[in-house]
Image (tube, rainbow, N blue to C red; front, side):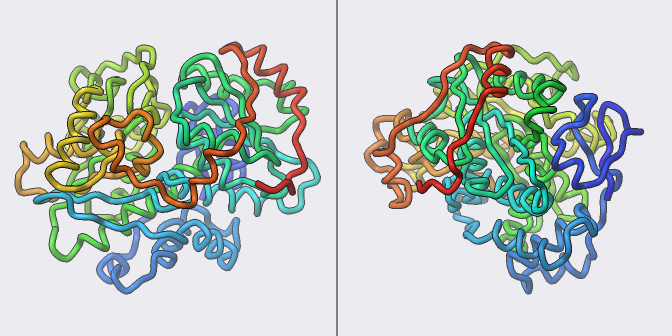
Length: 441
């Protein structure tokens, strides 16, 4: 499989190059040159396969022969080593829980798959590659965990100061080893712009070769298809008209779901549920793409005003707006809506939402009011404990803290505080040294 730049379709590269570069030299995101089609028999018999077998069948055509089958199966198995349960919340409303991984967020899937791929591609390299990533919260934690002590890989995470939760920050800043955190005095969009600029800086690339672990990287984006298939397997028998409501920030997750549908997964409709950063809901109304400046919200991992992956969504639909509109609805909800919904759903259904899941739940309810015959799954993308410090007071004491994260609260934060200024970050990147990657947690 080759991948082309969305800025220049004539520029094509291998899967390995797309993974190791992260982004094309012309700033374009990479996109597969063809959309493979799954065997209908495989879909019909999905219930007969394990999670790992499903993951391998879904991803193998996108990787091609660049990773041997045995190694690719191992990468998939290491990625899908935790459960992805469906929980019924209310009539026609189900939650797909994606927070049972090591950092309690859906991004564990893409981060672990990419770490496996990049580790394989760098296995014989004498010069380390630096994974440079911007995060609004969960991406950085998943990348730090997934790449911790991966040989030949150093990780630098940029995150907006005071705009991530306490637990998220602990996950970003306490590992040490081959992981370093830069605390930026700005927004996520500032962090993301700095990362994009760094990729095109030849001085940095000469000293410290960079790749991205944001969802702009194909190895982070595409494996998110896995859990849509796993959800369908759980829902298939009783619910033929299935819709997915996806809490959406950078739009990599929903785009992966749309790719899953493009290769054969029967999905009736997608709902992009955003917080007050409503660039895409406004676009769906006006067909005008006018990103503003990101505003902070309770659902901070979605505080993105200029979502990178939306160009991939447009590409999937051939830039045909009527086709996109027939497949996706987009709604926006503010913090008041979010907090009220977290309280109400816990009171009425005894189900604890995190702020992102609450936005997904709201999007699903709005769509079901228009299409009552559908059955909906909203993505519960992070464990509620990750946002305990901003949860409504009425339910805060009811949030369960998993044992595997309790120890993080006692660890000391280690970050480098920098202004939202590219030259300041560049200077730090050129001078940055890493601790011994064998250091313990």
